[in-house]
Length: 240
Image 1 (tube, one colour):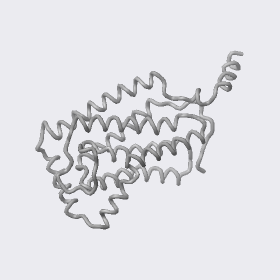
Image 2: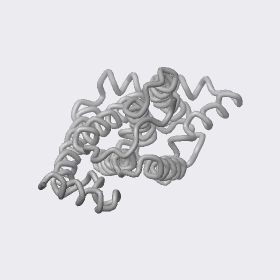
Image 3: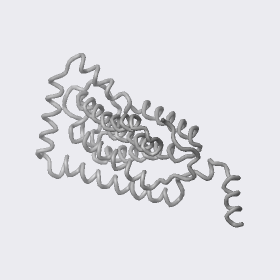
Image 4: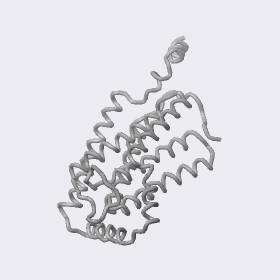
C-alpha cells in the first residue's frame, strides 16, 4: 500500500520538480570542488610563469608562438578564425541554451540540461578566476584579433571547447547508434584541437595555456558528471 502511495505521489508531482538534479548537497560539493580546482590551477600557473621562470616550458611557449606568427597567410588566417568559432563566448552560450532546451523538451527531465549548463558555468568560473589571479600576459607577437581580456593562462576558449564533450557523454547514454557515438566522440576530440591551434595561431595563447585549458575542461566534465545524478528518466533513446 505504501509503495502504491509513493508511486502515486511521484506521478502527481510534475517532472520539472522531481527531476531537478541539483540540491544543497550537490551545490556544496560543486563549490568545494570549484575552490580546489581554482587553487590548483593558480598554483600551477604561478609555478610556470613566476616561481620557476624562465624555464624550458616558457621557452618552448615563446618559440611556438613566434613560429606560428611567422608562418601566417591569408588563407590560414581565415581558417583560424573559423576554427575557434564554436568556442566564442556568444556562440557557446547560445548553443548551450539551445541544446539544453532541446534536451529538456525531448526527455522531460533536467539532468542533461543541467550537465551542459553546470559544466560550462563551472569551467567558466574557474577560468575567469584563475586567469585574473595568475595574470600571465599574452604572447608578444602580433595578434589577429582584439580581446578585452589581456590574460593568457589558461585558455578559456579551449576549456569551453573541451566542455562540449558533455554532448558525447549524453549521446553515449542516450543511444546505441555506433554512427552517432563515433561522430560525437570525434567532435569531442577534434574541436579542442582545432580551437587550440586557432587561438595560438591568432597570437592569443601560448602552448601551455591551451594544454591547461584542455585539462581544465576535462576536470570540469569529470567533476560535474560525478556530482550530478539523473532522476526519473522519462524516455529512452533519441538517435536510432
